[in-house]
Image (cartoon, rainbow, N blue to C red; front, side):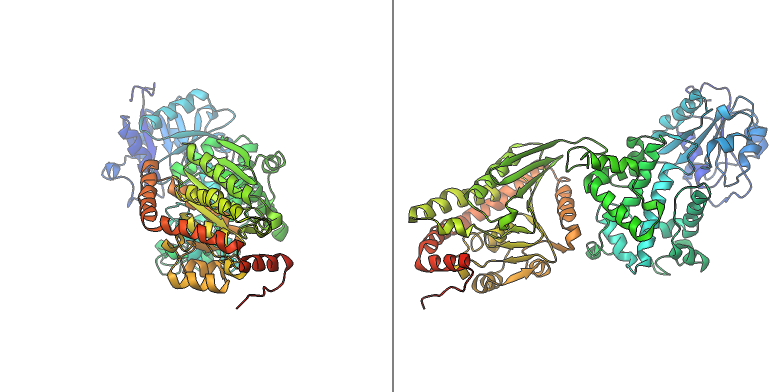
Length: 626
């Protein structure tokens, strides 16, 4: 046998279906002497790795006589007892049955030599090693050596917890998606939304592929063991009707192939689907079933999640996870939604994830204030917040200067990969501070402001080397709207209002007619500038002011997703792309911007400007001289 095993016997694998053959192929690839054995109920037409498709399966007694390590990979609840009776007394018994290990090991006569082996995915990309109270540590180490030799990551878990870790968490995710169907949500919209986060398949596509009957069976098994799981009526109805999934020709998606078109990815908020998964993960941590790192690694490596559930919780915000769970618990009364103590304690301590610098994991975090602007470094993202909510984040001189300093600070930090610009409260920004401008007593004050404060800040934003993403959830008018135009990307809520009303107070928009025209068409610009009308988030998307319009609950998340997506590119390439674009803007538009800054200073100090600003502050209609 393989020299790292330390045993004189060979490796026997009982079960010739996909799981058994996959384990046998891994052991064979690692250099072990492997014997494959048939078992009742085996499916000979296996889709397992080709390495073992042609390997002759031996009779059970022949394969087990002299084996040093036996993998029992069958669907038979009593198979382990039979295997133990035919195996040498010192052999290690490894079972893929996810029932509590003590219950399984009791019938073998050697509970200290029984270990659980639970593949975290069909390709054995990761494996869970379950141990019981009486399992010998050396036994677990022996089995771990085999998987390590085959380059399969192995994670130790508590075998007394029914169901594998990856099964329990994946099950919660799919059940929650099916529950959304009961509320009338289109399955394609759910899957498209989840896939936008980097998942190769949506939860409903995956449920159809793996079999709805298996999903229901797994859920009911956990219920029998006292686990708080609710089986959706929709799932039971589908199974009862024979709509078992892809192989049956009908499932969640009926008889058609699953279709989750990319253009539907923002119809549904995918993040709440993970709340029950995070709640279950917290429960597993509370009973010491495994570690945080193992939970995330098993889902990432075994189920191809882009990030594990605990990392997703940190990204979304543990406080928001708890809010989602509490709302669902109040609406349904189901125990599965009752937030676990671990989550409540984290929220109570202010440990909520990226937004606080620490959650389930620790992150690079910095928080500081530049004038009236808040700056945060959240891992690889800089979040800059215009923070004058009492005046709708109107941009006074301190705000423009603070914004410039915050942008410069983010630009100088090599750890920052993208910068998000947002507003506090119910506005992104209502534009320049009219009261401050109305208080200027000399023309020089206006000229100095636009040429030495506003202009350089706009140039700092335009030349920022990192991708910039504007987050609009409310009002973005005047200078606020123009900041959106200068940012590289933008996400707005449907209820947002974007406009260029400067002419209504006798001024002009200085940024939009220069740099804004690269994203705003001539007729759109003139309509906004002449009329002072405001566009909704959806209209702003259609006219190119923002990339996406989504429900208010999603706007911050989508902006963060876009920011994270930009980090896939080389930082040097990202900076080079921006430099190239900026060179074009500088050559063709900078002279116009300088001219508009001179013009806006004149307009603000003109008779029309004074009348318009005075009327605005006095909340009356201006009286223009025709």
